Amino acid sequence: MENNRLFLKKIATKKFILIIGIILWLIYPPKVGFTLHLSLGCIRFFIVISFVLITLDVIFFFIERSSIYLYDILKVLILLTVSTAGNFYLKSLDNQAVGFLRNSAENIRSQCIKLKKCPVCLDGWKKIDDNDYCQYKYIGSGGTVFYIYYYPDNDHFNMYIHYGPDSEFHLYGSIKTPVSEDRYDDL
Image 1: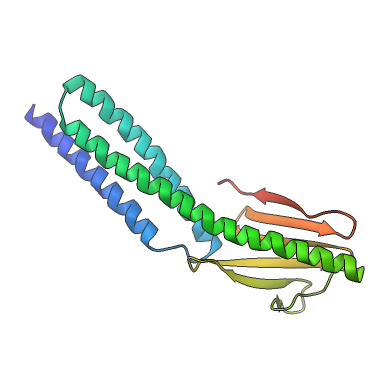
Image 2: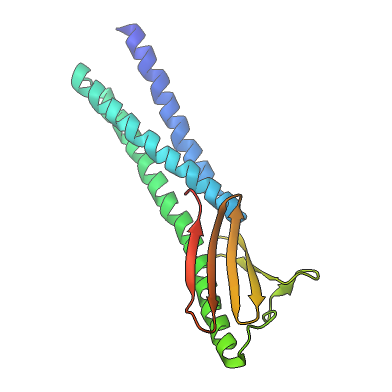
């Protein structure tokens, strides 16, 4: 029985470390879109781990009828609550940037229709070298930086937020077609 208590104490310590880890992870907001998606992946990992730990604690509680498992369930519920709140917070940062991109795309489309040609670059946007695209540095409310790109081509355009490898939010439109969107990512 003493050996079993030592095992439970080790598990309780690991749960406490998980709780501290997720709180520390959320204290520092992501700096760019890529780290935002990395943070979302880690937080979703914590959420899955929380459900597994709660299930194990409930099973052990019914087997041993020990109140120590109720305390462990409380710790895991704290982990689950913090992880879920963090997930919503990070998604809200992403939604701010996506909302800005959608508004910009609608404004660009109206300029394309008015001028009968899409503008080469927009006011406040930076032309990248001699390439055919412009870049805008959008800073979200949490200080997270999203780089937004705009590619014009006569009567149509493409815009996107590039998060990292195989991960972007893409908008496109033209004089004749409304703005449409695609999201390419695994999160």
